[in-house]
Structures are given as structure tokens and as C-alpha cells.
Length: 155
Length: 155
Image (cartoon, rainbow over all chains, first blue to last red; front, side, top):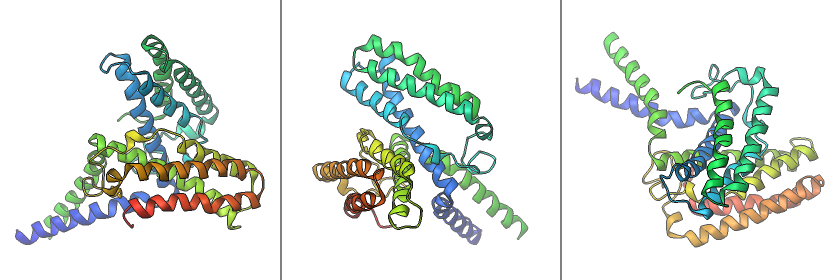
């Protein structure tokens, strides 16, 4: 029993130690890591704006502007290299990207452009006042959701 | 023996299944995921420029401009929320950020500003011609390395 415990512990440790290395192998996994980090950054900044919009956090023009500027800044990057073939959820552990993305690139591009437009509108609005921020929130959240609903696996 | 193998397999599977969830728990881990994704995106774009600079890839003004624009774009984001206390390598699994970061914020800010300046210089140079790209490479790579040498654990 003691021996089994030691083997179990060693196995768990080996798996844990190997996981980060495995996750970094291959260009598809590297691209996924970068894009998931971008999505996380979007989410954190949208969280700041959302908390203000819902009154869970006091409106702060500087913080709102910074968050909206971050979202607009990322939205204007060229992230095409982050979506290589073979990085969909059927091909890559940890991916939630549906294969439909690569079959509907024109639609993905249109949804991406709509998100960029909503992000720029939020950037213009967020520092003005709370009402302007709230007014811009629907379009931005909607644009995020449009792509996620169509092209991301449910959690 | 069969039973032990099954337990080992189950343990390994459980650890693997739990790892992504654990890694996503907590604001520190979320911030780390976002910043590591940003660093990965930097690295991918710097890789494009580096391959051209070294002649491993044909110079392509459009691709060079896109890569340099991505680096400059990320460098201009406000990433302060990605570096919370408690996300250093002593506090957080998977982090390579040395605690010294939080004890030397003025120096981190100065190194960050130098990197931003080098990124903007690269953005201005990359689409001009190969010689201009090559001339801008040293300062940009140097600025990345300055921060990594001081504030990141060796791999």
C-alpha cells in the first residue's frame, strides 16, 4: 500500500511536471496559448467595464478608458497567425475552437470586424460618462457572444 | 498489478483533467495566463522578424510590417492588471516571474518603456527594407532580454 502510494504520487508528479512542457509543444499549441491569453485579457478588461455598467464598481473614467483602450488595442492586432489549421477542439487538447471556424473564414472575419467596430465605439464612449459606457456595452458584449456562440464549444 | 495500472491510469487522467481547471482558478492565475499569452504572441511575431533578419525567411515587407505592428500594438497596452501581487514564481505554479519585479517597479517601468520605444522603432523600420529591419532588431531583442534577464527565472 505504501509502495502504491509512492507510485501514485510519483505518477501524479510526473504528469504535472510534464503538462506545461507538453502544452507548449507544437506551433498549434503555442498559437492556442497566445490566443487564449488574448481572450483572457479581453475578459479581464470587459469585466472592469461590465462591473461599472452594472454598478458593482464605481464609475472611474480613467480606469474605464484604460480597459476600453486595451480591448480596442487587442482588437486591432493582426491575429491571423493565432488560428492555424489543426488548433481546433478535435485536434488539440485544451482548445474550444470549433472546426467550423476554418470552414467559415469569411463569416469569422465579418464577426471579427463587427467586434472591432464595437470596441472602437466603446473606446470613444467609456471615458465620457457612465451612461455612454452603458450604452456601448450591449454592442460589445453582443459582438463577443456572436462569435463564441457560433464557434466555441460550451464550457 | 492490473489494479495498480488502473489506479495509475486513473490518477494520471484525474491530474491531467484537473490541471487546466486549477490553472484557471484565482485572479493571479488568470492574470498569468493572459500575460503568458501576450509573451507568446510577442515571441511569435519576433520570430517572424528574426527569421527575416537572419535570412531564414525571405524578406516580405507586408508580413514584417504586420509582425512589427503586432509587437508595437501589444507594447502600448496597459498591462498593469496582469501583474498582481502573488503571481510570482514562489507563489504561483507555472509562473517564471521573479518576486524582484514587485520590489523594483520603477525599474520594470523603465525597461518596459525602453521596450515600447524599441518596438515603435521596429514598427517604423520593418516595412522599409531588410537592412532597416535588421538595424532595428538589436535594440528590440535587447529590450526583451533586459527584462527577462533581470526578472524571469531561467527555463
